[in-house]
Length: 231
Image (cartoon, rainbow, N blue to C red):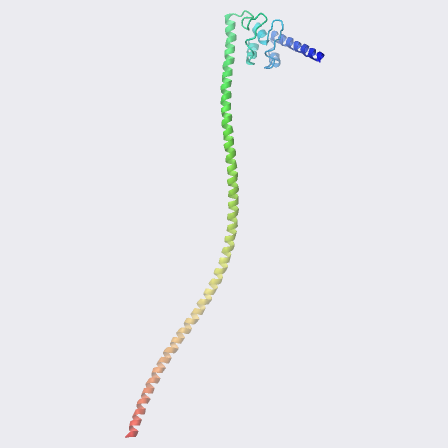
């Protein structure tokens, strides 16, 4: 356990020395590769309590300073002689102002980032609401679509039933038409028989009147004969 802890400390010191060398050599690419948000506030030198930002300011490398500031390092770190970052290296007013300008730019970038973050959060919230609405709309659509499918199925079934009834009605109509034609033929025959009956009746009436006249004539003749016989 002791060996592992000592080895870890040794490795950490070696890593810190490597970072110091990279900064002092102004190896920007390697600095960006090795320094990140997890180790930007590490004390690289336990004697003077310098961090990566201290060394970057010490060599006045603008690109490295700007990169380290982009990682949001602590600015209130004190050196071994209780000096802050600006006083540790006797920076001139111009140099301090420059670093402050970089800090201000970083702060403005952070504010802009926060605004964009809030805007994106608002957009995400809106999108979530829209997604909920769309999901509900899709569910409603699916439900209505299922109802519509069932309605169409029922209509098709009803249409088939109507088609069958229509065929039955066509058959019934055909049968009725045939019966109607038969009745018409029968009616024509009956009408002809009726006319013939009326004709026969008329003839019978005429014959009856003729026979009545003959009977009357015979009756007169019979009366005349009776009278003649009496005389």
